[in-house]
Image 1 (cartoon, one colour):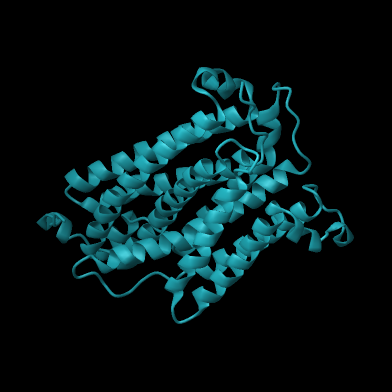
Image 2 (tube, rainbow, N blue to C red):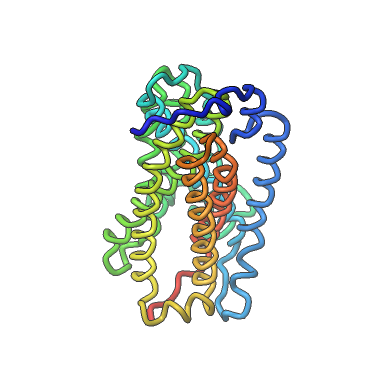
Length: 341
């Protein structure tokens, strides 16, 4: 790994001034920003279905907005702990890195994921309808269907992940989180689909790479804020950037292949504007492109700027764009799947 040596001018900058330019979510300002992003992100799955379905002639399933919101929370709950585990491993490879690490959000993420998975399981238990009373929920019926078993698996996996995060070996939570990712990949491709295992494999790689990209960048910026002016922060960000480039390539490849499987090449352009799935997919592609452009800007600053840590500014924008991508991904799972023409 190429070492990064700040210039004398950058080295003389005070720790306080340097910390102001770092990414992170500390302080009241950062907390307020997170709350605003969360509120805006919630509007996407709640209001998105009506906008996506407008003029398409397609019908939305009952409670589409709520289901999309729950899936958004579930995806976010997967991103946060996986990203933490990923960047903690990267940090151990940085020479001279400070021993201090940001506090883990894994327990809170597991709790949110558990609640979201429980809500989705209750929908499956009522025949994919939104339950209006506890009496409508047939818990025993979950064991009778494939979707019900997968829903229960996700609920239990998040519960175990939370217990692992509280234990003396938090790294073990990677296994229940892997179970959630596999369950989501299987759920997205029912056995009636042509080549469901191929589709599930593509989705699994897509979900894992997206979680590492989004969650990893979030935790990397939190770590850099804590480390302050320590030059190990620039080395960590550079190491993350190299891995993130591979993740982006894998995301692009699996996303393209999944799109071709859902919408044959000769119909893609038309379905991108005439179907709800196509419109949401188009929005997701554009947002990923924005995130990729911000990532490229951050990598250029990291390599060429006198102070490599100025790359944190576009990286914060990249995190915000990826957070919106997670919300749009939740919406994508709730709108009707396009018909193969």
